[in-house]
Image (cartoon, rainbow, N blue to C red; front, side, top):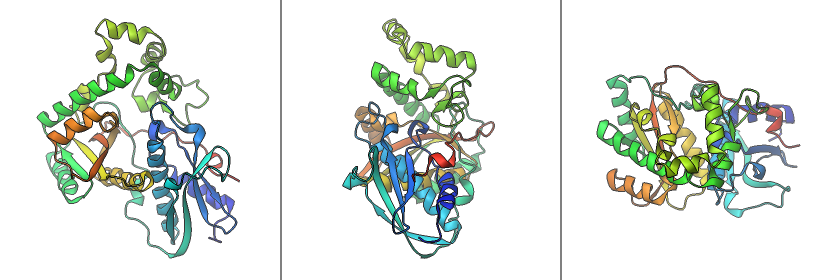
Length: 335
């Protein structure tokens, strides 16, 4: 890949890093090898050891960034062959990193029709605006044509998912170690040094400063456990009201046993797919992570028997767009 130098790679990495990642940890790092090929590696310092013990979510995040890199290269007319290195679990390449993929130039490529939506994609945690019925119908038709998306719409379906999400969220938030890890990635004050770069800040969480300060104090202390014992735990994590305002929930699923890098690439395409309808989304990954919740969804909404539920997103039109908070390009490239 002789046409790519370090400066160009940084520009490409910034485009690739528009992709979503778990807790906005942005673990994907890029480098050029001695043959000029692009290497994608996971920065293990950004691994969520409690929330993602197997590293699967990190692999999904790297896969999404990989898809972003493939699209960024295609926009320059460069086609690539991708070697998925995730399952090889290569950590000897450089201390603190796990190789995820290698990209080798193979010739020319046409730009992806999804690329124009990368800048318009964003997460929205708040209540959604009302979606036009014809737009919802369009999303439902699109989901029906996809092999890895199941549409769940209407008040009854949304109520079921809302209740499952609140129950599953409470179960994981009762784990103090999980809460501590989550709070470590929350940027609950604009004064936080990483507020504009990574993690979940007040804008992303749709919180005001006071609400953020209270949330941080409660989650990072025994106050949550005390409130939970008093029967108030669920009210502290409940999002059912927001979920019920969604135009729909979309269940994203992929073949069982598929590499998380491959699934992550498909996940980014999926998100850009509904972005085209003017929808934002909020991942409710806990519904896929908690076996009882995942099983309940499979019973209520038919999924292919050989597919694994990867994530569930509530989607709809947001009242306004949100900026993406991303690391600077030079932090994404390894020399």
